[in-house]
Amino acid sequence: MMQMQETSTQKNSLFNAMNSFIGAVNNMDQTILLPSVLRDVPLNEDSQMSSLKSDEDEGDMYSYYQLLKSIRRDIEWGVRRATADEMQKERTKVTRSHSSMSISSTSSASSSSSEEEEDEDEDLQSQFQYHLTGLQGVLSKLTEQANSLTNRYKKELGIGGWGL
Image (tube, rainbow, N blue to C red; front, side, top):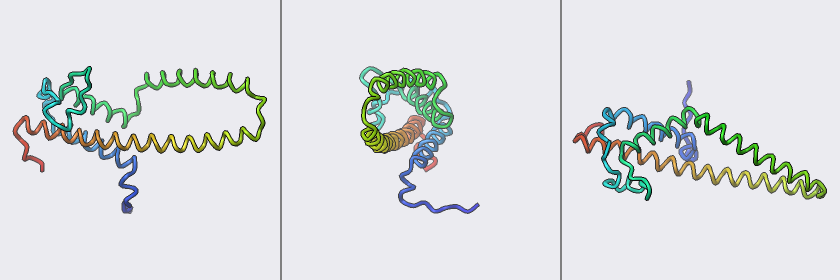
């Protein structure tokens, strides 16, 4: 099979961001043979990891390890079915409310509806670009934090020089 060369724009693709994250979590999973060692190890000792801790949550590295694995599973297999069912119910509610609103406003001119459709299309494109940029940024940060957690585990066990 012929391998295509990556251009600079492909390096910033969502696909590559997901692959980098999944690779970092796979590396973390293969390196951390004893995840229980991470229990009760606070996140705040590592400057990159301390930003993960919320005001309400006093998380440890083990819970963050589990979180990263859960996010990887969601990327690989899709969001859990229960969440998808809840989202479908919410969409149905929104669709019903929009359809009842559109029925009451059918007296509007047809020229204004075509302008609204163009505005909606432009709005969808800008929304997509906004969320795509955000998702790539989040995946980049999660990749860095998975690598940081792996390095922190090595440091805790005193194997910091391995695999470099």
